Length: 70
Image (cartoon, rainbow, N blue to C red; front, side):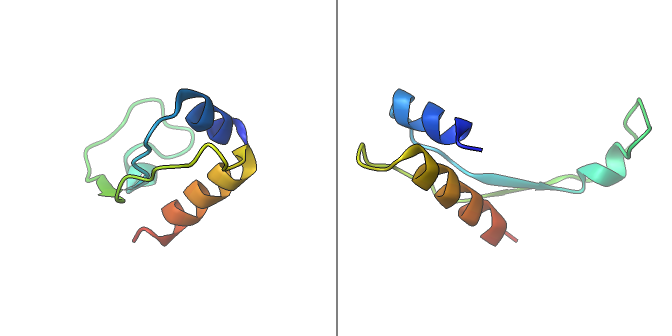
């Protein structure tokens, strides 16, 4: 799970976490083509990380932020 932390730190990138909901209804397991439906995207404020943040710290903060999006 630290891969995202590594990418963010090495690229010195800002990150806009988002949460997708409703995708399981559009493309359920075992189905090869999507059906019509609604998908909701919920965006967080951009996150800016310090060069002092570790890969693990970045990954954990991103995961925590995404979990809080409703």
